[in-house]
Length: 61
Image (cartoon, rainbow, N blue to C red; front, side):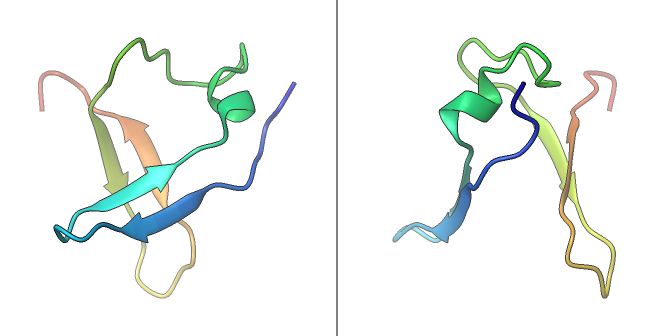
């Protein structure tokens, strides 16, 4: 089971930001997101903290 991996956050030339996750992490059977093509997520953080939170985007929001 892979529960962590080294990914990357970077800024594209068009100003968008992307987060890359290692394949082993994203394809692990215990990974919380089941993605075939793409999926919407909610990304948040708390001021003064160095953690980034990624949650499934509820369709009713």
